[in-house]
Image (cartoon, rainbow, N blue to C red; front, side, top):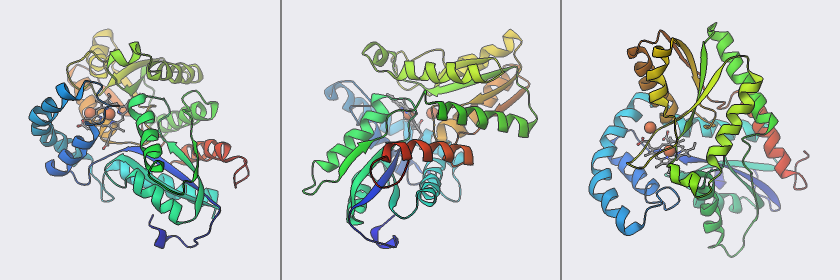
Length: 334
Ligand SMILES: C=CC1=C(C)c2cc3[nH]c(cc4nc(cc5[nH]c(cc1n2)c(C)c5CCC(=O)O)C(CCC(=O)O)=C4C)c(C)c3C=C
Ligand SMILES: [Fe+2]
Ligand SMILES: [Fe+2]
């Protein structure tokens, strides 16, 4: 939201900045290349010494991947743009309505547009002297959460008049989050009148060495999955998707699990992605299109991809509650 679009400019206000990963501006190779160049140059994402990584990135990856990824984005693109951008915008609009005019809610993307720096400037221009930066990643990961927060602090480092800052902690095991996931899954299964033999919880993968170096992401994913499966009456499994590069990634890999299920007599499954607060190319295309094809080609018979919490009422109830909790003592009552 630009300052001019917002009705009131006052001082002493509070801003909430919802942050997600980011997405290309268009489903075309050139736009995907710009986005991937920024994303994959981030040392929080690729932890290989720059001198070794940059020639691979520019010499190989950015020459081959944009075309392939653009094909995936084309299949999921909507009238409102990339699903991730459209849903994050709707989440910000819905939260703005719920929090009222004392708070200014905006959203930003770690890579691509709207950028974190510009969004913080806009909030400051609107008179926000206190900002809650809320990376919408339930599980903490240095590649996602820390990178987003680094960018927030990086912007503040360039400001003469800094706002006060709070950051939303990870909410992977928050009962409000587990409850919302449970309702989202149960409601969708009921609407589809579908009883899966197995529910696969697919999280975005990470190189295995990040776990060995102490990143809590893997533990956070395991805990979300365990708490959720304790609440549901369906047998669940966990898997990690979206492998990238040659290093060993967290296992088991989602595509391997989907190939193996039918061999074990598991032919009716649902798949959910509780590591994503909004549907995106990784859930709609990788799970919903390619994952379904893999499972059915391996002998599976029925496959349902369940949507993320997105801006659903249960998802927004949860987001409103965890945001209000962090704003306590600022301007809105918790
Ligand atoms: C939810 C948490 C995420 C983690 C952890 C994560 C790690 C991670 N990702 C890559 C490489 C790629 N990820 C891509 C897309 C993508 N990743 C996440 C989230 C996490 N990534 C989201 C929400 C998205 C979707 C963006 C969208 O526009 O819809 C992509 C781009 C798509 C593609 O080309 O396949 C890449 C590349 C690495 C290397 C990594 C950990 C180090
Ligand atoms: Fe990713
Ligand atoms: Fe992917």
